[in-house]
Length: 88
Image 1 (tube, rainbow, N blue to C red):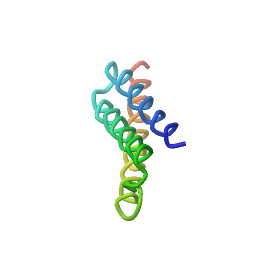
Image 2 (image 1 turned 120 degrees about the vertical axis):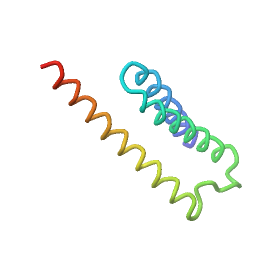
Image 3 (image 1 turned 180 degrees about the horizontal axis):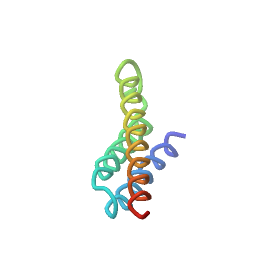
Image 4 (image 1 turned 90 degrees about the vertical axis):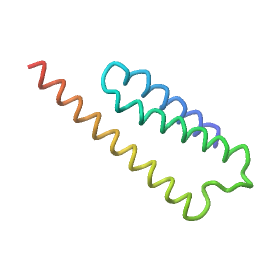
């Protein structure tokens, strides 16, 4: 199942980078972050003895990832509202 999560993070990162080049360059940073999350998840899946998601570091990593996702969604909504209002 870890491979699926890693692939999902890779795809999300590539998707965000590809489509953010046209709209807002700030999303490129978010896309790169999700690519790094995919690498981190793949390493954890390939080498479970490292225990990258164990303990306080794992909790902090998940909290930071959740915060980045929430901020990205908020930025996206703000950007969409700005674009819709500018077309009126």
